Amino acid sequence: MSELNSLKNDGQNLPQLFKKGWKDFLEIEDSSEPSNSDSYQKKTKLCIETFIKCTHMVNILGLFSSNEHIDEISTETISFLLLPAFLGELSLKLISDERKLSVKTALVYFRSFLKHCQDYQITNKKLSHYIEDQSEEEKKPDTDTIRNKIREEKISRFKENKLLENSIKIIQDRLEKNEISVDESATREHYMNWIKLWINRAVENVDSIKSEMDILEHMEKLKMGKIKPQPPKEVKPLKPILITREMLQNQVFGAGYRNLPTMSQEEYFEKELREGKIVQDYNSKSKGGASGSTAEDEKDEDRDEHDEEKLKKAREWDEWKDTHRRGEGNKERHG
Image (tube, rainbow, N blue to C red; front, side, top):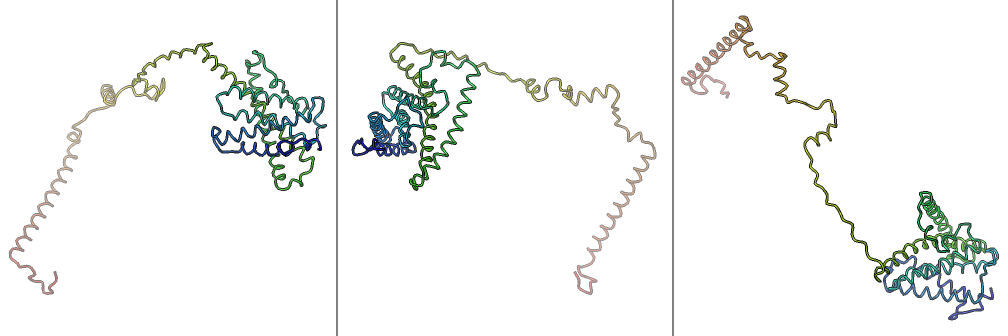
C-alpha cells in the first residue's frame, strides 16, 4: 500500500490517478456524443494520457511479474491489470488520418492484456490464438466444424458477458452509495469480473482488428499501385418474360385438372341436341288436346263478361252524375 502512495504524478498517487481515469473512461463509454465530434475526441485523448501515466507508474513500481499467480496479487493492484484493455479500447475510438497506426496500437494493447491474463491463469480459455499472429492456413476457416465452433464461442461469450455485467452493476451501485459497506472479498470479485469481461471484449476486438487490418492493407496497396482493382463483373441483361393465357390457366388449375371445361355452353347444347338428349317442342300448347283449349277459352270468356259488367256500371254512374247535382239527396250533409 505504501508503494502505491509513494510515487505521485501531478500530485496524485497511482490509485487516485487510475480512479480518475476509470471514471472518465466510463463517461466516454456511456456518452451519446458523436465519436467524430471535437469534444468526444478531446476527452478520449485526455483519458489515454491519464492511463499512459498510470502505466508508467505501474512499470516503475514493478507491480506485476509473470512468475506470480493471481492469488499473490493484492486486491488493489488487481485493478491495474485493466490498463492495457482500456488503452486498446480508447485507441480504437481515435479518428485521424493515421487509422492504421491507431489500429496497430490497439492490437498491441489488447494482446498485452490477454498475455497478462494468460500468465496469471485468470481464465482457462485458450488465448494463444489471439495473442500470436496466425499462419495463412489458420486464418481461413475452411470447414463447417471450425465455423460452428467459432459461432458457439461467440454465443458463449455473449451469455457470459450478460452475467458479468449484472454482477458488476450490483457491486458498482453499492460502491457508489457506500464504499465502506463493500468488504475486500466482494471488491476483489468485482475487479475479477471486470477483467473477465474485458477478456471477452479483447478477444472480439482482436478479431475485428485483424479484419480491418486486411482492408487497410488492401487499400494501401491500391493507392501505391501494387495491385490493380478488379474490373466490374459483366452483368447479363435480363430476358423479357412472356406470360400467355395458357400459362395463367396452368398456374390456376394446375396440370391435369379434371374439372377444366373443354367446350362452351353453346357447344354443349348442340351436342346434347344432336344426341337426342334434348327435344325442341315449340307447339306443345297446340298439341295439348281439346280439353286444354276449352279450359283456356272458358277463362277468356269469363274475363270478357266481367269486363263488360264493369264498363256498364261505369257508364251508368257517369250518366247519373250528369243529371244530379253534387250533394243532392244527402240530407245529413255528409261528404
